[in-house]
Image (cartoon, rainbow, N blue to C red):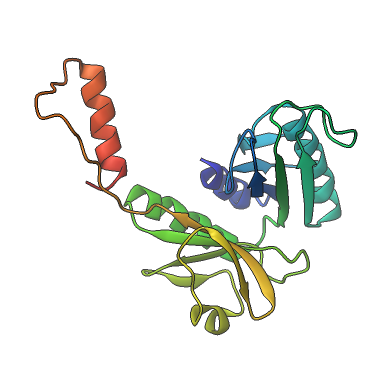
Length: 212
């Protein structure tokens, strides 16, 4: 898990860059919200699709750690585009690079809550400031914790959003990612039987992940 690796890095005082797909148009290897974590020397967790795009993002993330900067970059995945990467997917995607200092106590709390909420199947939301000069990096919200990681808690809380999308709040643009939502699994076919231990295990895991 990306946030477990991020927590490990923070506990070591290690700076990282979180790479997140913030826009996906057409056919792309991964969709909005997909993440990858990089240290200055190596890939730590996650994937945004592999290939040349992931390689270029890894190299860019390493440089951004040295510069302690955020960045955004768009990728054209059309094979016939002169400015593209020669990929065959045919779509476009935009990637956000967030520099995360290893000494930030708010990031440590957010990682701990992310891990806890996933384990306990509790709904939560991540807010990504898309302004590269924002004083916030990652913002976490759940009904249990309230707002974590933002200095504008009061301003944001009056306009909290709960669906994955981009939102304008007080002249700032955010990508809001919906996490760990509870749901139901509906199984059709009353005459069906689970005939293998593997199928039973997979069904049990699925029901558990959905909180049912």
